[in-house]
Image (cartoon, rainbow, N blue to C red):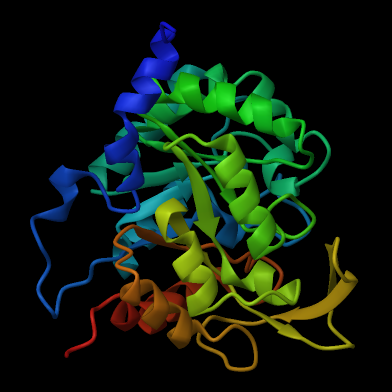
Length: 316
């Protein structure tokens, strides 16, 4: 049976897409030595948002660009609090120029507020992915974050992935509580059901930690073919936590927000060791909302100082 153009392009993109946990070839500079960092640090603009309010930021995009560049991050992860599908094209182009001028990349695009809110409107982008592809192209990014809440979203994810493949763009879903990706088994099932080589996972251990899932080496090995991005944030489970996170498995789970350099939450060092073991060489994004937790600039600096050594391969 004759394939459609989209199906053909999707199939021929397979090998490249399965290797896309790595940055673009022109960014790698060849095989890194034992002392070089195979993972590249990206800063999510989420760091200046409140945990509860994803629409507003306490910093401008220019402040975030300057801060990321000054502390040594190599990319920004863009969200709708700064630039989204609602942003006029001339403004998007101007932001792209300033990011390029700072020597930064855009590691991923989250184009609206519904996707990170993980609400019932979140999967709607899969019904019309074109504006999100346009935004990613305008920002020079090859990865878009999506949201899925029900099995009926799988067919739309397939169609969206096929359209994205025509533009060499990938789609990825965060391992996120109260979604089809709340559990390791569920995540693997959905990615296999979508069955597109340019559809994968944003591995984020804190959400699986909150949901009571094994987020360590065994889970990472199972996710290896699908690892497109790596988010990092940290929480401590405590009955008196300041925030309750909704999970489908365990209902509301109380947490405190802590830095990636603090103990008592995710085993951050162990996670990095496991990602090195499976050969992950993509972006690691500081994704934590510091807006109502601690001073943003201090948190961004301390996150970089703690994580940068972890991006290095361990000496044999």
